[in-house]
Length: 326
Image 1: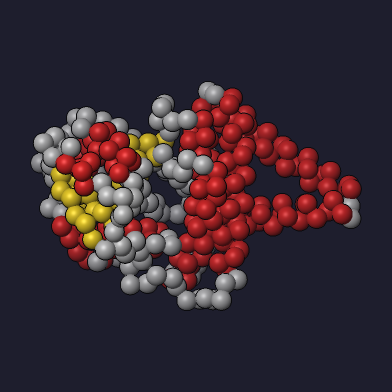
Image 2 (image 1 turned 90 degrees about the vertical axis):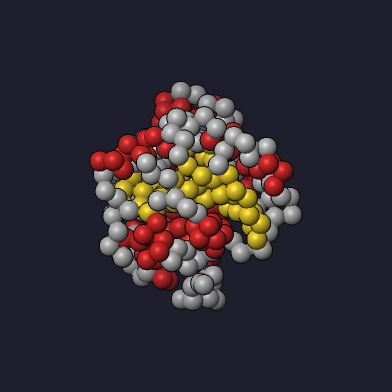
C-alpha cells in the first residue's frame, strides 16, 4: 500500500490548520502522514497540532522563515512517503481525496499530479465568487482544473502530488515564492516526467477573504508569471497576456470619456455585455444570484490586479533578472 506524505507549509495561520486537519480526520483512505512545517511564524500552530497527535500520523517542525517553496523542500526531506502531496493551509480536503488519488495511480502511471479547487457549501458569498472567478472561462480561459487547457498540465502547489523520484531528481523548488510552483512544474515536465490532472481529486480552497487581500494576491500572481518567463522564455502564452489587455483596455476606455463620447459609450456597452455574461454564468453554475453579482466584482479585481502585476513587473528595473532564485 502506498504511503502518502502531506506537506503543509504554514505562516501565522493556526485556525486554518485546525480546519484542514479536521478535514483529514474523515479520509476513507488512511495510509498517509502529515507534516506541518511552520515557516518562522510568530502566531504558531504547535498547540493546534498537538490536538491531533492521537488522531493523525502527524509531525510538527519549526524553522526560520524562508518562504513557501523552500519550506516545502524542508518537508520533502523529512517525509517518508512514496508520494509527496502539498496542500495550502487554507484548503479543506474532501473525505474521498486520498482514495481517489490512490485508485487513479493504480491504473495510471504518472509522476506528478494535481487536482482542481472548488467552493465548499459553507463558504460565504465572497469566497464562492472568488472560487468562481479563479476557475471561470471568462477570467482564466478554464485552464485551472480542466483537461482542455492549453499545453501540458502544470500542477499547482495548493493541490499537488509528486513521486519521491521527482523530488530526488529535480531537487524540488528553486524559487521560494514569485511563481515557484509554475517554475517547478515546468522543470518536472522538461525532465521527462509525466504529469496529469485527477479531476475528482479536488480540494475546497478558501483563498483570500477580502477584496483587498484578493487584489494583492492576484497582483502578485501577475508579477510571478513574468518572473517565470525569465527562467523559461516562451512560457508567457497569449492567454496569460489577456488580463494585461483587459487592464490597458479598461484604462483606455476611461480616458475616452474626455475626448470621445461615442467610443466611451461603445466601450461601456462592451464591458457591460462581458460582465452580464459573467453574472449569468456564475449564477447558473453556483445556483446563487448573489454569488453571480459578487462574481462581477471578483472577476474585475482578478483581471485588473493580475494585469497590473504583469505590467509593472515587466517594466521593473530588474529587467530579465529572476526573483528569489536559490
